[in-house]
Length: 205
Image 1 (cartoon, rainbow, N blue to C red):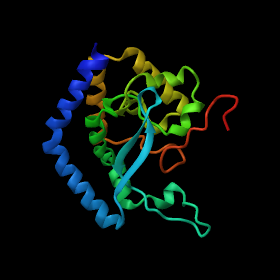
Image 2: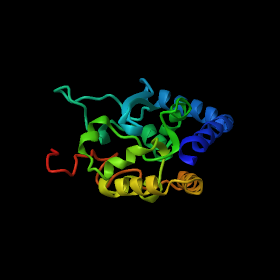
Image 3: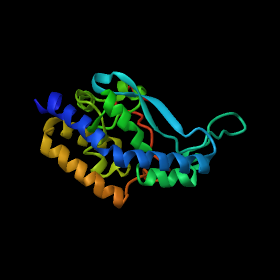
């Protein structure tokens, strides 16, 4: 079955085949961030994977750890550095997640892994996005990314789960590379990054 065997083999093979390109990209991005931010450039965070299992995701850090006088973090727009904006624009901050692919936490293609605190906020249909291994890129990412509402993103995720096959993954990867050359939808409308999901169930805050 493609979802469980062939897909995983393709993920691992593509990661290893891409190393001659991705290693220089990682070194260049790390150098830019070290010079531009002058602080820790690595970011890790707990995310929810397949069946809601938690794992540490690895990315490049694109925002400074800057706080207001009361000790609370400044808004994303105030902490996002110029070099961080450049790195995010071309999705270079996502490249370290290839390590997550090798570990089996992620696939190259799948619904994006989100914060564990979102798990109780999904509707039963939205929760179906966790039936497959999450991905670095996905159907929602090539169809609007952060310009979409959460409800639209989850609808795309569930559609992907229902239609998952090899040809669809190839299509998503191809369109992802096109978007890397012409980046769009990096920011949510009115926000420097993506807005937080607050739920759509009656008990959600």
